[in-house]
Length: 341
Image 1 (spheres, rainbow, N blue to C red):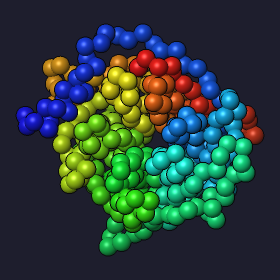
Image 2 (image 1 turned 90 degrees about the vertical axis):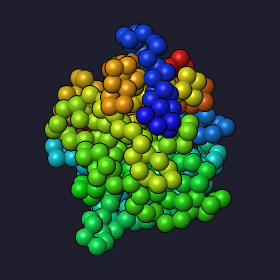
Image 3 (image 1 turned 45 degrees about the horizontal axis):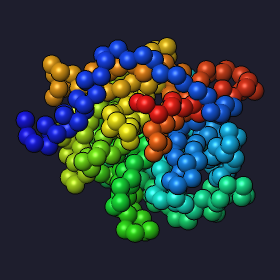
Image 4 (image 1 turned 45 degrees about the vertical axis):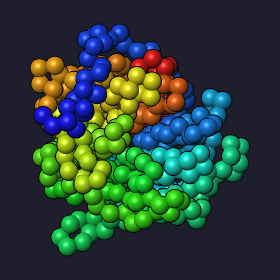
């Protein structure tokens, strides 16, 4: 095993020395009444939590336990083959205190952008999603036999690039990339054809490791159990370094704890909703190069995204029960788990 692979296995294995059966964590509701929330980010310096309230076509922040609109007017599209979910804005990531990047989900594949905003201070009027965008990058239109990309779900940023998980070309399963130079963004371009490298569809969750690798949670198929993967890629070449079976259904988010450096994932569990939740991903001591040992930390009803605050508090968006009646109360939530993971 080469040095890079060994270091990744060792880092993932760090959690294995913990108890194999962790006591279920206490989950607290921060705010309810959301509609298919699909993205979450913590603002640097202020600690305010921003949420992509996707089916409501807006980005909101939580201030003193109350929702405040930040960006409004996003259009909506529909995701899924049954059940169906309305979606609008998706992935969120801050580049600095005032610069928020938002991934589109409400347009047709091949017509979606990542949009950059200078967010107003708390209490100020909300921005319009289109006219108030500072800049935008994209779209990834159809080209040379490759279909257009859409549903820009997961965003992860370094000082030099933004990485974006996409949904459109199911034969390739692209992670896209935008180069960042200072405050200037380059073009949105296809970067990693994940399905070609791991033979499973649907890159969704994404984060960056301490060593700078791109870490992707592969969602897999809605109707296939336990096919989600966790894969490490080189940020320089886009080539796979390590691919691990997780035995999870549908990974939607991955994140490292800033305190313990352990790795966590949310599982939507499309075909087995009662099995979804938050999981710690530990190395499998017998098969460290091929699989992970998952430890369930909390049961959650269709979790969609996750983000740690610097103090170790973990924020998670959940869709909640699927309502047939569109006039039924919205049951999406932002929840948190206190520092300690």
